[in-house]
Image 1 (spheres, rainbow, N blue to C red):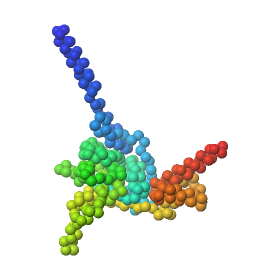
Image 2: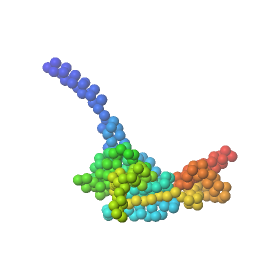
Image 3: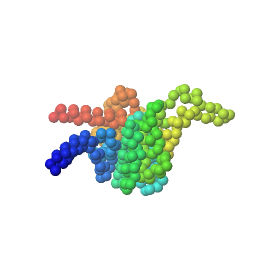
Image 4: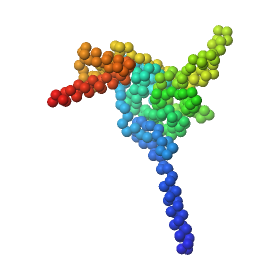
Length: 291
């Protein structure tokens, strides 16, 4: 009996050591949140709640009326259980693509809209993510920001599965909204034009081009974003300055906004926002130093 108890104690000690080597269980999703990011612990993925989502209103996004109208309508259809499409937002950097998706969460979270952000390297986990949220009563946008693929990457195959489904039906409470600087998400090369075939009056793209187009075509809606002209940029800069409590606008402020954009080499909503923060901050600092 004593020998048996001795062996039992040894077994328990060994099991205790083995348990210390095993990875801890992944945290359960906090479904009270409005947004999540897909994260990893010891190679196992889980939904991590975003404690403080970036709150931006649709009214704060200027010169995007057409894009806003389309994506808001599509999202309202989705929230009402009506047919709706996955959306691909493409175009110039800093023109409000990501901000528009985040503004949807601000606008519609009270109606059950939720956001799950997935990085490109985690696209292989999309089927797993969809299975996690399929049974939930909320409506989820899977958000893939700044999405693009290089030649040879395979993550786009997992995205194709979620967009179109395989033998299993796609979930009716999930849509994919993705942003990219590339219209077809993959790089395009001059030598691919050599694959194009001309049969009579018909033009048939080569296999490489067809493969690239096949992914972007799985998004039912394409929204294009363009660089702002000078006056549009200035209007956005003025609006952001007012948002920071600086409503004064004169020729000096205008000149400063233009100079800021020249130094950055771009006229975009992002640059206008950065100018407003810089200018309002400098004015605030000067006032503090006067006291």
